[in-house]
Length: 276
Length: 159
Image 1 (cartoon, rainbow over the protein chains, first blue to last red):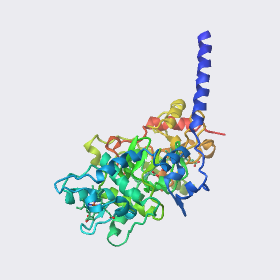
Image 2: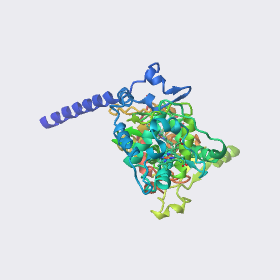
Image 3: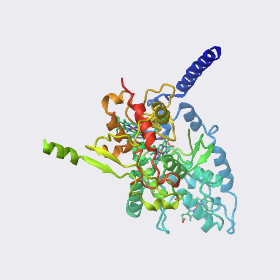
Image 4: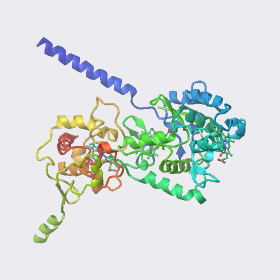
């Protein structure tokens, strides 16, 4: 009898505790849309994931000294001027100061490579420079070197509006990317649109959905404990609905990146961003 | 009278849920055999999928479980001990006042028959899916008994 009572008491305490703990983490406050820091990332109907971030996460992104992504950027800054490969060249040999030569360039990627006549991301272009011009090994897509270099290049376009071209030779890629975006996939049979178009602002479990904008990549994600590429995020969003993902850098994800960047046209580049 | 009966009969569709599943999935395991069921008036499934009623206690666990129903991902439900209820679907509090058990069953089994562009997954279906991860290929999200357990729980959601 005594044991029974103690058990019941213990149970109800536990129930109360878990409820209290639960409600403490719930209900992220709606962002203050008049806050100038938030306003920068809202353009017309479009807004970036920064807006649905917790205020603490926004603070970390806004301070380059706190933003952990800058550990990778610093590494890339020293790689920039280091000769590598048979041609004996560094990025600097051809591109000089990245703050000058790379200013604004990533805002129009992915784009059609003039000679290769195919759609390429910043990462693809960096590896063309390494393989063909420096005569050295390409970096793996998700390597620290590639993530850092991609962040260094992309941050030279920070605060500049995305401006990709989807006409001309880019058109078939754009159509492919759009088709991907609207296509249901996986055991849960969902398309990107179900979450990022129809339901942004609503929550899935405790996560508030954004419009799934690509403007902050590579991004430092707390969950990853490191910097990660946009294509890694695509893989995550595919796997969450039990769909088979593609590899980073594939034509499928490159076309999808173009479609997403087109959706983001006008929003400022915010690489390297910080996310939950 | 006779024509009324005829119309009612015409509205009955037998769904051979598993039979034509793609054999392309056979690299891993053969697709799961799903039980056939009757759909009445494109609106409801009157019979237990598993031939017997479910267990509401088990059903309540399944709607919470992220690996199973995960209904809380999209729905608010009267489950106060969990804080993380999503908001992309309807609030299911009182849903049994709005829908019958048979209607709820079709809602779970194959909601796209009612709302083609719905976000809600079909929980008992393996056909017509695209690029399913090999681990889940040829398998429905829930078993027939799990569907019945969840039905047994959600029919209690009255206000």
